[in-house]
Length: 481
Image (cartoon, rainbow, N blue to C red; front, side):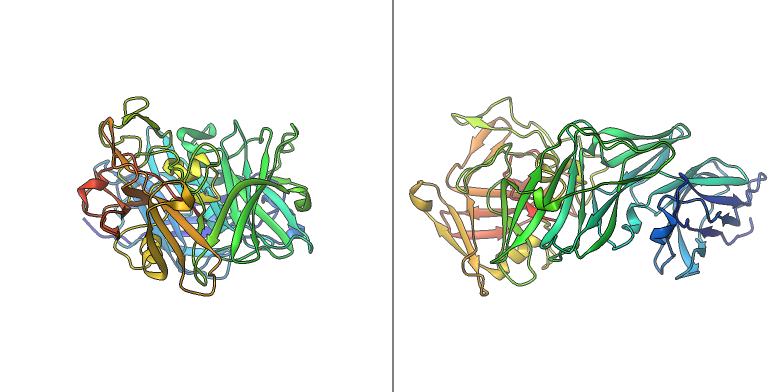
């Protein structure tokens, strides 16, 4: 059989008022030969943001399209096609030299390695955390798709956009989060010819726009991509950086006014008076070294707690959690490796992240693993840590962490809250175990964690430990996105 070179020509949409995006033409051979090209054209009026914003997607080096289809033996394929020409313009050429796809089922932008095509459904993700781009949006959040094996394929948007304006007086804002008690705003979605729908138990009721690590917003307009649909009784939360390398979360509860998209529009301008978002949630974070991660000052729980309290215990990938009484789990404990998390991901999706799911997507579990730059490893190497036998007279053991830099006023306390094994609770006030969001690379049943031992004075990170089996109940200390 001859070998073919596979090229996709694509033009990304410039954005104005109409809801549809690109048009794609594909040279599909119906005689089981490989697809050679897909050509894309776009009308200048077809867009999602007003033309006055001058917002568009220009291809950049490293961009990829995801192509789903079958080969000559009808084996399913999901392949990335890489940009080879067209960087800086709306016309690009994408190629996968080793592709054997002979029939296309769906195409999407951007390529997502966890996206799948099965049972006539494209399952992909609307990113729960998006990086702000002034006058535009995070390109990775501009999810577009086409379904069907036709000559003229038209890409549509799998998202809608909220438009925010940051004023000159809106200073110190690091991230902005929209939440709803009943509306899925981000996470996994299923795309069919009938439209886009959130995947139950794999979507989140919040979405966060962040200015970037240790950055704050500047004056301008910004866009947040969300799962299509109106937002019911929204709550707006912000993380504001404050003096002394500290951060606090503030919120403004919804007033019952839903965010309703006008008919045929993909953008909803949202007027936000950030000066009125002044109700503190009680969740705070501190930085212990320059350019370091911001760490929450208490463990994840369903309500605000004191630093010495354990909070809720979670299995890895579990967001419901357990409490204990008299040495036993409240409702049976975790008896085996949780099966909620699909495909044993190397890093937990935020819908299975106890911090993001129980607080909101401005927070997450820390990174782990052997990487010296992993957040737990950095915490151990870049901060002073001291075992404490009686924290502030509470009788609670744990570890106090302080800065090696000039941030001496900032401290963290990690209580030795013990852990759960099957239905029994162990080592209260002697050991502390804290989940990371990172699975052990060598064992699918084990995840990486931080281990504190007050008896030995040890603070260790040991991803290979059998004590980090995913069904164990450990505490969670959140960090800011």
